[in-house]
Image 1 (cartoon, rainbow, N blue to C red):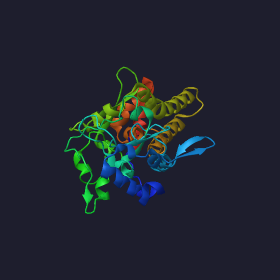
Image 2: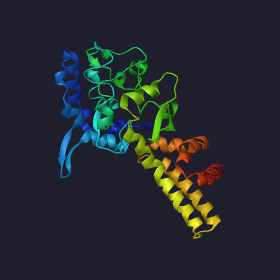
Image 3: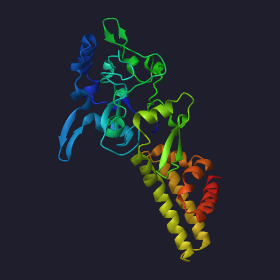
Image 4: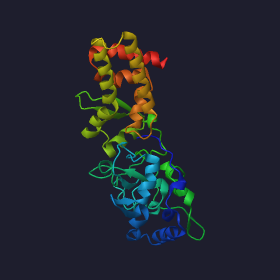
Length: 302
């Protein structure tokens, strides 16, 4: 997960239209969930390469075609952050039906994070749960109260973190899996929101922990080892080796600023401090070059 700023202007015309608002008011008036029209929050269309969604296209501008939760580049569901028809943790809750077309409630999520026994209708909260929309005189919807970052929704304090509201560095850390199955994400906040988000979206499923190594660590490790082999074969001088090592570390830092890359938050975490670099990167290097690489990282940091 990474912090995202999604522009309201990226809403599709249909989501922002008066007609959609009037249809939403009818859903609110009748509380008839069957009136929720997925054609509005998906806006599917055909292309020569397959069926796409205009809403998904707009979400991709902010999320770079990545899942909002696990940061894999993937074909995404259009996920309702607050479930629109039911809430597993509150059997008497009708679902956040009034948010079915709300732009800040729509996120791109991969099938595994959103379905397959993961998030789906799970939405536990720490605070007081909101059960109904806020209406103005004339039964008009108070639209500002539908924004995920405004009251009363923000006071619910959902366990599930929202990438457009919550900063991941406040909730997560990373650790090398002791069994060798990749890199695990761990919760660090005292309220347990990080850990619950991990559990809800299954952010430590095996293919994901292994992919973090493959995408973030392996390219750096391979380049470092190739450089070391060139030094041993006397194809480069020690001075060239050191300069090459520093360049690889600079590239690692540059990639941490590339929001379009997978696992952006892990990349930023790795280069944020010598402690993080030592904890996450060094275990994947052969022992005899760990000290050399670590010294290079510290010198580049200074």
